[in-house]
Image 1: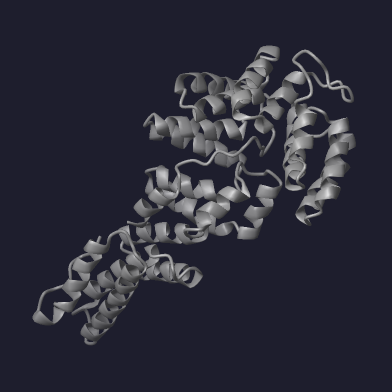
Image 2: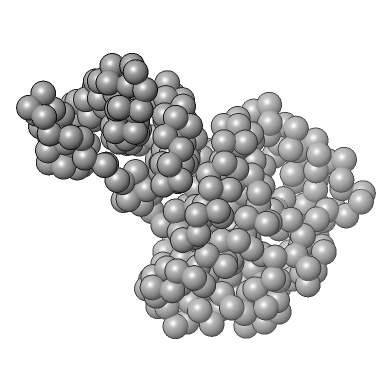
Length: 375
């Protein structure tokens, strides 16, 4: 049940604005890494972001752009940091002050890349024309094809979206944003197998993205791979994920993460989904242990209580009559099941009628009715 609830809570895909994870195999290296002379400034910019010194980060990122004008990630972090400082108008003017065919006056960078980067700051009506200009000026620029494909997907033009997203990954197979956008497109087209393949490629590029590990686990349809995905979520500390978001080491924003965690944390959801696999394997004590950790983390989210009730009731069924004191232990397990299902109802869980029926069965136990096998 918990995986079904999580599917309803979590949008199948949350594609952020352009970001980056690691160097693409066929991509121009200058697009995804600074030149050696800018490496120290780049590391200083990341350190400033880590400690929250945004003005210093902007200064360092400007220096990186001067010496590595095609390094996309520096541009993106610069844009985001300027916006965080309340300078959105200034940065928009900076990136949208050129016409196609012109060059940036200070770094002599052809405007196709700047148009592709500036489109994410543009008004809705201007984004597609600006990206089309960038693609026309440089048909080999993967970032421009990704941006145009993503905008077409946003506007439900799936045919054109697929053309440009496939072109983006043909130009740069390791462009993580394009992989996620293609996954979204495949999900919308009902092709979960193709979407899962895009997830797998993305997670190779961005292994610290706990949110998409969770989503991959829910989508993959294979118990072993799902188990691995949920276990991976638990290895990524919340502060590690937040640091990766700030550095654009994952295609995710803090806003998206916060929006999800208003419901329950990534680690909570991973534990709940792990428990379902463990129960399917008959490992009820281990499932209880994992679920108790979830409740300790967030006692107000109902999903773990639902599964704890199932796990304890199955333990009651398996324990009754197996040993001299089995009846007493079974009764204790049933009491725990009743406790967690009652708590589930109090928290407004979605399957209230089903749980009320199970509680009625427990209350009728004294009349001699055996416990059902909960699944």
